[in-house]
Length: 459
Image (cartoon, rainbow, N blue to C red; front, side, top):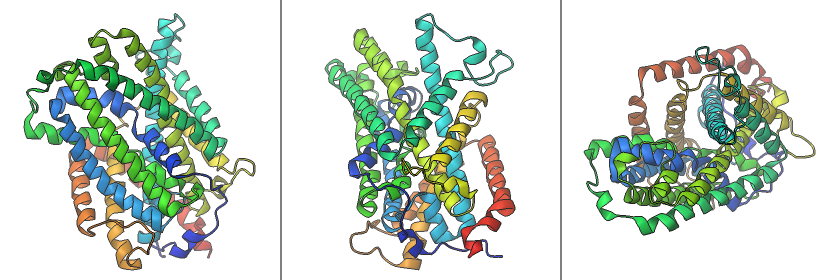
């Protein structure tokens, strides 16, 4: 039995059933939709207050550097292997079927948890908004199952997941058109915050600049590292992109670069307006505007932040639907998942499955203990992708003219591995146990179903 049989590189050139209609700007906005969410509206405050102080801007620079190393690796893979599935398809081609499947299995975990977490968080904001109008839902329908509080299902999280799933099923262009509108609204909110807040900045609030010392800056980098996650969703759109060899790398690096600049500017203004110790709150950006007496603008930012969190849900549902489509096409999951709707040219059934699983997780399963799984899963994927670039060069040579090329191989990939492994070992034992259980489940599914039904096995 050959568990490491590889998908031939030539198969990545086969015609796709999906409709190629996306351009560079669509991909940049897809990446920004996934990246710029709770990171800029929540993490900036708590990380400054508890971890790094005003020196959080250095934490963002360190985290951006480590993410950039991973993004460069993704960009070369996307340029040389322009197919749906992202890291799953790259690992399948370079390392073989079992490793490829396990990467796909880890990505399913990453995207599902991200979806469920955002839907649950969005529900929390919306419940608060309804309470203010006197239209609050009963306790039984306000959050995931909790016998102590009498909660059974988070109804709003379930409903918003189904709405986003319906939108994504309509096709890439239509789904991303809504995402693009939301991203521009989000940019408008951030610009409003910066434009108003910059006039109230007091430089004395930036001293002491690094109250928690070098350890605080490094710890802050570990915290805000996860504010950058989501750029990998761009790579799953390769088969719906007009010129994937050029547009996908530009989308990955462009979205990460813009997000980094936004994070740094917002952090500077935020810690310049409010003393960092007072920022350990859920809505630091709106709080800062209220702090300077601009309550009306703070209200606009709060409502806008709630609405634009949906971009993360759209991006992740889109990316996970394309991933499961690719895995189904390869036979490692049921073939029905690779069906493409003849009207919308989108993987309708795969997206419906994604929506149903996300809704169950968000609506019923308590996520507080599972959310950190996203961190360790994503870091391991980054490690394997970095090693994969070295192996890609060894097995298939240097990139051809016109293909993206990671500079300083193998130095950059090795540094990326070291950074990611360092961040992994910072995570708790309980997270490692949950991670190993999920990984073991993936191995069992492969041996029971995947190996036998694989396209490569049929051949």
